[in-house]
Image (cartoon, rainbow, N blue to C red; front, side, top):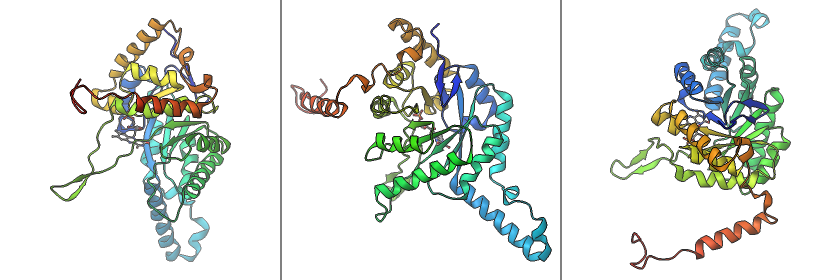
Length: 340
Ligand SMILES: Cc1cc2nc3c(=O)[nH]c(=O)nc-3n(C[C@H](O)[C@H](O)[C@H](O)COP(=O)(O)O)c2cc1C
């Protein structure tokens, strides 16, 4: 049996399979089943900035009411954190998970503006999170904020969370930066310990019959994986950060591709939501079978074998790849679009 031990965010995991942020973490029984099937760590579903700022507003208005009712009350008013409403169930969920499983629990904060909500990082650390994932999910809609300003704001958010805690911070990224490696370098300088590539964008479709938006969540497919593999292969030689691949890993062969490209872990959601946490057993045995067949003693040995570290000029290599793919296309003898 190949050794699946991996190191991620300074933590030692028994396997590179991580349950990605999703509703699985809301049910301790599902989490237990995932760990029994081989999960090396659990990322909890997110606490959202919007949830936390609403929480703070509620706390502030409560303080206002109390302060108005008695001029002396200011002297005994507790800290605003004591009134936090929405974050409390999350902290309890985290504490409960910690007692149920013996793998690291990673809490998840989801937001993009600097502000008081990032203070919740400290509470998550106190509740026992082994690490914190910060999801920078954002769709640029503001023509007056250019890419440089947006990135600066996001780096400030990361730096403020890093400053608040001593546990490692993993940043979950979108693929839409002018230069992913340059942004990752800035995150490294800001103190992040890892990045997850990439967020899936839940773009609503257009319902042309109802003239409405269609917000149904569509699960991923392995077709989404190559975008991640590409980024991992570029990042792996140029950063010391831990790399997580999230998006499109549905089987052991997908996991093998991510590891060969440089991933320390693969984080899965869709496949586990579709087939149940026990499906990890299948994925794990597929990965082990592949490692055996290729003669690797463990997944760490295969990590990064296909990254761009051996390419003297990654930029030229990317251009060559592109031109080869585009020029290598041949129309079927029966014409474009026909099945060969
Ligand atoms: C139902 C559902 C809920 C999710 N909730 C969160 C969340 O709260 N926070 C987050 O960062 N990602 C969330 N995700 C994204 C996943 O963590 C993961 O990054 C994404 O689904 C890609 O992985 P996959 O291809 O294995 O599904 C969610 C995904 C699904 C399907």
